[in-house]
Length: 166
Ligand code: HEM
Image 1: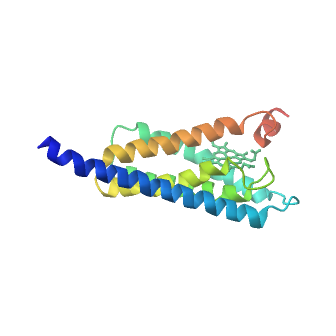
Image 2: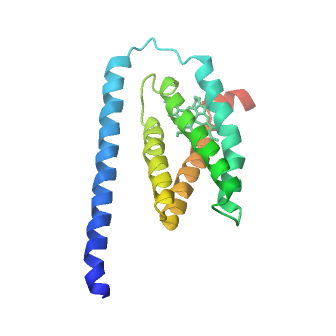
């Protein structure tokens, strides 16, 4: 019985990996394309882009922690909170394409944004299809990305470091 069900399950997960890899590659290609159009060295990050970025990541930090560590999942509070959190993360990721302070163009940190835009819909899809384990794992990954990006945003030389300690 196990041997009979193992093969289709493996094929399905291979297909999912292939689709994810394809989506990531398409997003990288899109980012490179955008870069080729926006590579002007005189580009200046507009203040609103950083303001929106901070306005979305600051509430996303406690809200995400609450959603992940709250023992009750799937109730109305989780679903409403989850929608708000997903929206905050999507706005964070999209808005980040207007922030180009480090390399002056679309740079490697923007891959984080692409990953967020790929992983969030996947996580929502998993929840809708009853794959709660994968939903939880994927959302944990996106939240870890938020924490990591926040941590590195404090690095010397970056805007937050100058703002807080400069
Ligand atoms: C607590 C979380 C976060 C904080 C405090 C934060 C803060 C910042 C700040 C202040 C900047 C402005 C430019 C600079 O680096 O000096 C920035 C840039 C950026 N952030 Fe975030 N961020 C966070 C989360 C995220 C997340 C979750 C993503 C992706 C989904 C992201 C993607 C980016 C990108 C792509 C840039 C532009 C980097 C560049 O200039 O090339 N950030 N972030």
